[in-house]
Image 1 (cartoon, helix red, strand yellow):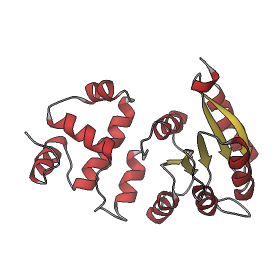
Image 2 (cartoon, one colour):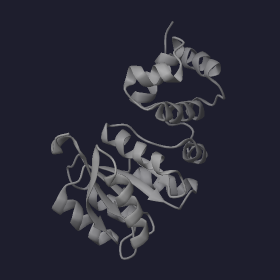
Image 3 (cartoon, rainbow, N blue to C red):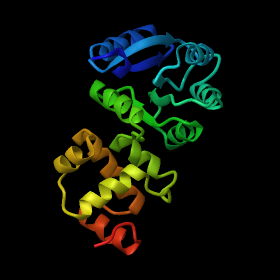
Image 4 (tube, helix red, strand yellow):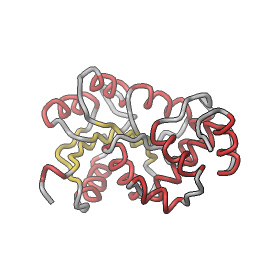
Length: 209
């Protein structure tokens, strides 16, 4: 694989052992590598300017400058860098603030490493990434948000009877990611299953057929 094809990641966390584990997990992948690390928000902003990473894994509870403040500083720049909040915080306000400040993904530290890797790949490709558990908590803060473009695509494929595996194949994403999108779609539409989602989507004009 050419180096230009590798996702360049900046890891930001104030715990050295956490950074060590995350770095080892990422560097074990063929399609990504850790290009820099930071232990606080100020270091994170400086590393962003120096290395211009593709994706930043940003802890929220940082010293000197917290994660939200660091994200806000980075988002002041015209940059294609994507940000995933990697944190222990699972309250709806924490999630809301991270996403509002400019993060494209939110992953809890206790989740399997594969979730973190999926998040890096998906935000790098332009999608938002919220695992089902996080999406459910976030929905309690704001259930009126509109569907995102990728969620529209998933919903359209549901409407024509595609399975999760078929949707993943059609869109070139992981089946796990399809499940994340389904959870978000159900929450945004206020439904609990695929059939209800299709009915509500057609009633609202989100899909046709």
